[in-house]
Image (cartoon, rainbow, N blue to C red):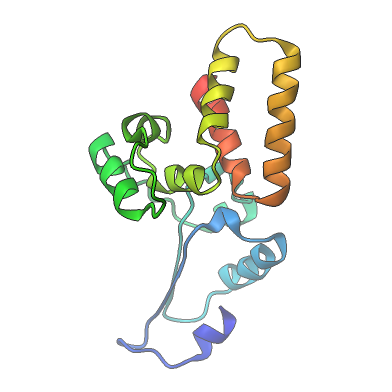
Length: 165
């Protein structure tokens, strides 16, 4: 990003950088971003987008203005999932998926891309009812395997606790 701000601007001397999925940035890149935010170049605007406010380090949050956007409606979420999910499954329970993803098509698409929809549903059901410790250990092991191979899964796992508790 540092190289970006050195380049010439296109509009009235301003340079705008948009960082999408801030919560997926590595620790090293987060530190580099912090240095830029601490001393931003003149006439620069840096927009940080995150779907998980609590995953952003306090040092970053304290230097930013927060703008909250409302979640999409269930219908808007369903349409977005349908338009952006490329798998051939035609019988996806879009109403249920959009409901549990709380207006966040990104969460829904991640869930589907990671093939954890059934595990997500099973985990929510087990946690919201009486559950067997052995069953929960099996579910925990499945989540651990998935999270080890794909760090995006941790956000989905955290979302379960937002729903159930």
